[in-house]
Image (cartoon, rainbow, N blue to C red; front, side, top):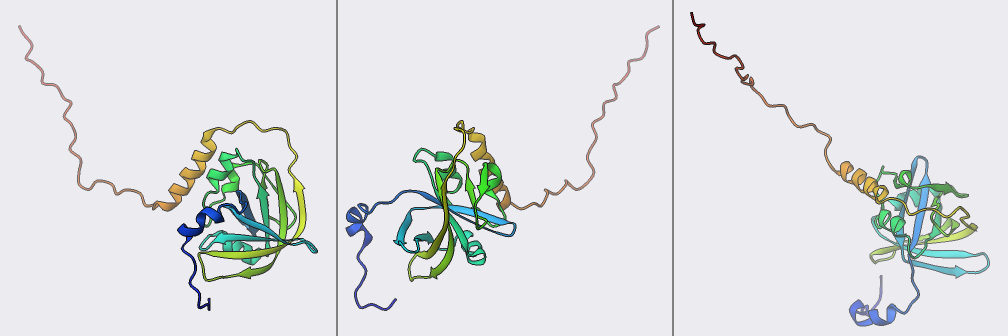
Length: 200
């Protein structure tokens, strides 16, 4: 980034930056057998005709190549008290792990998954990707579909849903090699009892 003006230290301007409206959204996408999502906070409408959205996502996410290949993504509007979805997608699941297997979801036009717990969704076609010299990358999408997720009121899921997802992620990080068997012969315990000589 060519500039002769240094950027401000975030700590010195954070109290004002926090006044910019921000909330949690779930960014999702799918391509082939792969699908993933991650919580994002930087979402903004950038055009009215045609309607377009901008979303910024932290670099290095496994979701990035899925959006690149599919050219589609969805912004899912979450309820403020939806801690389950927020916890599962706090970070993008590792490549090959399908976190959507643990929660009910639907597929919107463009192929992106949307949790049934979401309040609504906005399905977009990718029109621009900006790799800026910062810790985030920017996606601009043209809105093709949007809707509310109508469903019966769901009961609060058991915490086991979250635990199952976290355990699956932890297992993927471990090696699948089995522990070696002990070498050498195993001394067998002598279970024979000494007999006393029978009396006369």
